Length: 399
Ligand SMILES: O=C(O)CC1=CCC(=O)O1
Image 1 (spheres, protein in one colour):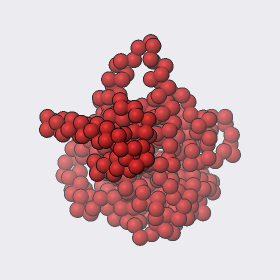
Image 2: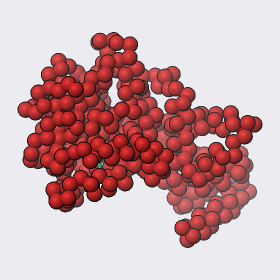
Image 3: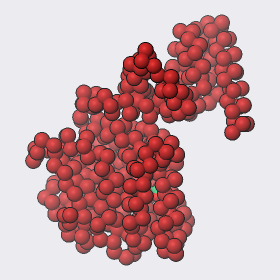
């Protein structure tokens, strides 16, 4: 288990060479979230080492790195990274950090830009949470240890659907949380509590990708958009999943990061990965119940068609970064009205709410359709929409 002496502590790291052994390949550094270890990046290693040498480390207070007593700061965590790079003789790297790792990334973008080629900050914000909340969490861990906080974290970090689908992956993260010491975890909480980059983002000039999880309630897609709009050269990739989106939506996460780092993902994406990305996007838009029904109804006759829809419609087009899901839903409804395809139209009138489309927006769309598709088409669409809304209301009262 290699360690370096960096910024006054022993920092544990792991360096995975590129698959083909290219010693001069660019380096991608991965920085973990509060409460996890460098093992949180296990799902990424196979795809990332196809293209990069991958350096991951346990942030101070976590895993096998030293956990000194006292409050940490994001500046200290940033200087740990600079110390790690110096110790390993690495001048410039790509840096990818999640949550507190994304705060560290913002600090590096401001104070160590010369060391960065490209910056990726994931499931993070310019400011995460409020001081009161962090102080309460610190007090809870000091009084009772990690048990309750670990259970609550799992509830925030993954969607319920993922907890059911992949309990082993969730359990691995739970064990990382339980392995932490009180000083290590509380020191990290203090660093998050005190970090606020809201007024400083414009000074980050390194090209930056901000990855946001559509199901992330901790650091939202709105937080991701705020960072991307604030830095000089930013863009957002919205993917499925909650806070630990690299685990929950591995294929989409890998694709977003690799695309930003210049890998021709369309070429490189394995069909299984495209299927996984597509299935997650399809579930998110149409709802898991509908997708489960479709999968249960697969027959030898329609299996290849179902597979093609998942990979192409959902894995390739609905996941493209160029338009938000909200716009794609509105466009899809408009096209289905024009084509007069009632079955698909009802499906998307029902699903659009999952992409943030409101009933008022659907009404406006139907008014517009009355001009461009004709009054009979819009009239019919109004009655289908009314049917769908009534059904949604019935389901809401039954729930
Ligand atoms: O602990 C959480 O739920 C969220 C979090 C904030 C910073 C981090 O790394 O995780």
